[in-house]
Length: 436
Ligand code: S3P
Image 1 (spheres, protein in one colour):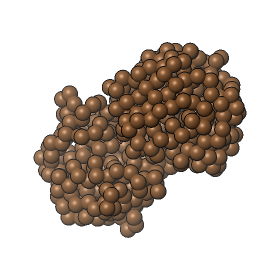
Image 2: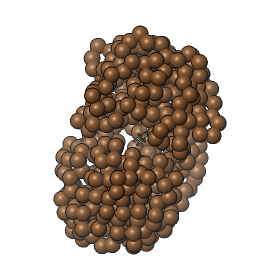
Image 3: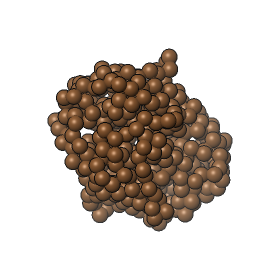
């Protein structure tokens, strides 16, 4: 667990050796959720035991699901209650910092026709929820939000759902998943068409639980009433956590690092493609498939990076990796521009504004736009950064120190524990001069 609020990172150094970052957050959440809805006991190996996934586990326990932790947390047993087995919770469901938990669970709870209130911390209570409550409302659910469409979400009991054919206005795997999960409970077929490909872990994992998911290009559909059968899942290492090391090793001369067992689902590998366009030296070794998800060891060596215009088609495929990619841009030669990335403003913090403020502190020339940023790379300094409680901002500025001219201090870092509880010891072991 991260027991610190401020991090001090010495400038310079290189990343070497072999690192296994923790389990994929998106896949870990879904393992618990689908395991809870299945018949039988689902075994989940290498589940991420960060605060976000723990919030999902706590919420399902409050819904009557027994979840056991064995082998010091390396093995989780989810005792499924079947599609119709969840119970009305006695308490408010507090999903902490986790957008994936609140959005996907709103679909499951609306489908289960249970009365429940879902809320979270001050960051989650600022995030937009109409993107899920509107389509779920179109399916027949009644869900109230705060006046500006933010949590708490109050789901009313007693409303049966019917299938819809929904075209997503924004590319969002959370919204797609919330609707498909609600569709499991609905009369008829529920289908979602996305404007651009987003992570497809829900579709893949549903298939692993024996549910027929009909996928036709940008459209995915499920017929309601299908039962889920318990299964065994091994969670790959999270490419979103690996991203800090991919960028860190790419910008720090003398680095050569292997990241073991990383999930390389093509809907998640935008960070590798973008770094590749910038001139990074990343190779995938030992490619294999683990439980329906592609996995590889990623070898990354220092390379001279150059600024690029990030192709907008890659934005949804790297959506969580932009804080780290902005550090790569700061260390690159020349200008990097990102556009059509307005979604970055609706994450755990406004990641365009938070990153721009931090980069300016380091002396990096930046210009922001409503939907993106322009970063001029070159030598940069140190300073004190405020991560605004955003885990990925904190970790991005930590790895920025590898190329900084002076130390970087980062405030408000406790939320690193939401996605990467062991970031500090792992990064230190690989060569980063990081200390609480
Ligand atoms: C996630 C989807 C993405 C991503 C988030 C996890 C998921 O959110 O940013 O960290 O697990 O489905 P959006 O769907 O809002 O883009």
